[in-house]
Length: 120
Image 1 (spheres, rainbow, N blue to C red):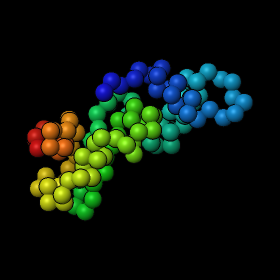
Image 2: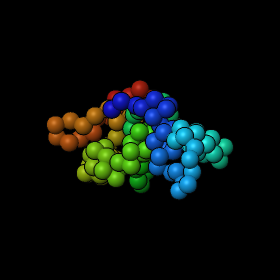
Image 3: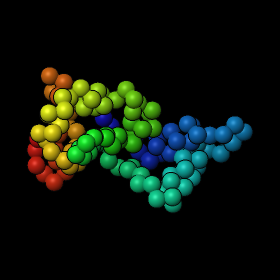
Image 4: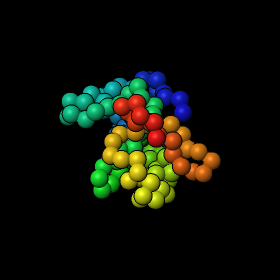
């Protein structure tokens, strides 16, 4: 998955959130949105095209790459399905932590790498 450059990201945001009658360039609108989110304390991941799964004691959640978020494909993301289809015992065996999802094998299981370097 190729990460779009900053122009593509700001233009995509501008296109998605432009209000009727707003004639500013799409990149200006996107830049304004990014600045407002950053000022509000949101962490904007611009240069990380990877997906991560966070496993806690009782649940899990995926950090989707920014291009996945902008494209609006979070609900249909292949990594969601791979994690959702896992039996609870498999998730328990991995242990709590943050893992980068590096792919999906032929059995449909996600390949994970712990962010601290341990491979699962």
